[in-house]
Image (cartoon, rainbow, N blue to C red; front, side, top):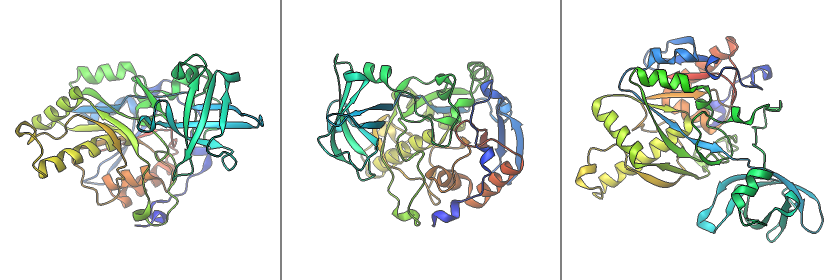
Length: 360
């Protein structure tokens, strides 16, 4: 398929620049896949479409202060580093990062941040024009230095400074490591989650640390030639048990955001492959997912067989992006583009701080 098939027109004024208050006062477009019916509700009414026995699966990754501003050692030229992903496979305190300006940053270059409290050594280039950087801290505490010196990066289409950095975190964010927020979860409040639990809708958590591909447009015209950037994921023992129990009991697995979708589908695919190869123990023969920690480069596009996700909650995504392709794989390209056109007509707010869509 061509990426041009996943384009749409969006008036710039519909790109949300600030979050709404309270979180659950955003709007909710409800899309029924079987009938094509579209409904317009408030987000706090989401419980009307969920039922006892359903399981919300959300990404509890936390956005780190990944934007570092400093200077090049020697010349003193200004430099900005955007940390994308920990690369422990390459050594302690190694990160994949974007650097600006990038053309003059070569392997061996040292970068200085916070008047020497934190330093970075450029080790190599990446296939996506990034860099591998090894960080070191004057006091030995790299994580602490990043937390003190860095700032939370907002997407490039948001131009209004954020008064409270916690509004770019979900209320359940726990595991530091993302360069961007899993934005579908930004609409939940503790009170709404508690009300859903009282109604029999439980919540469990997975981790996908969001990196470059989650928010960059696809440059290639042919989807077959797009290579996804790998991201770290984890689905623990407790989450696997609850997901499997939900499927056995006939409940629906409701993925909160595209990152939860990718984690669930990646692990379900790996689990199914192990069964097909005869590598799974007898107890796992009926399991949908097994615990897993590793990386995934899964690119979900039309034709993907969804094994784990029954219902998807998501925000409205950029044209020509992997995320728009993903939701089109779940609901169908024509139906998604029709829903997006309806959202534009109804003046929904788009992107990270925008409104939400529930796909049933």
